[in-house]
Length: 278
Image (cartoon, rainbow, N blue to C red):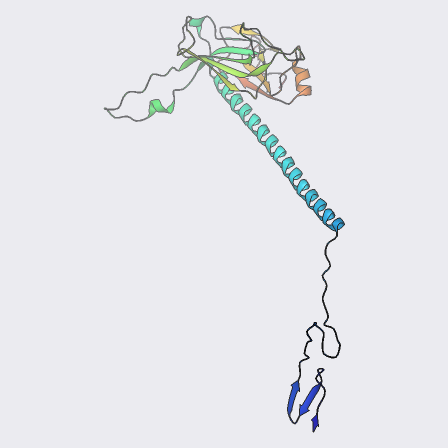
């Protein structure tokens, strides 16, 4: 059986052979017999769609940048708070250790004198580990170290060339931080330099309040040959306003309080060892 069809794509079967004839194109791109070739058309973006896409992209980028900036600010505040708390703990520990070693030293005419904002006392300290390090006969001897030193803690204020304390726009004195002075040569005529060293411990402590236990109550001033039985220490990072009391400061600002017992302190006249107000 033989079937034949025209050239327009029909199938022609001759015996067992099946052949498909491919339609031929004319010179103008149309198929034979007047049929046109299908043309695919792609739709382009309109101006409104392009503007909307750019706006959404800019909004997403702005949101990401704002979130990143907010995270960086929070991270900076956390690091600042951690650094401030760490420095306050270090200074509180150092002051506590030196106060526990406070002792009477009659050669200087007194053992401790203190007010609400500063304290001066004689403290016994252990030599550094370098003194106890093993040495051979050919090694140089270690430098001498004093086991008694005269220590002062007080706030440092900003001053001008004449030494006048500067104030801010509210009229409060400008506090720089907490400083420590150490005199290792116990002589009345010691000078600043190799005999007396003064350093700023930290700028994160701008409030210092000290009270001294006299056996019956806390007093703001202490003087005498012997240290008191205990000292109350309150420190804070915020500078106080002029005339602010301890109670007002603790109510308005965050502060750290510690009571240090002094083994070499004076014995209370009443003989009681109970300290009220803890």
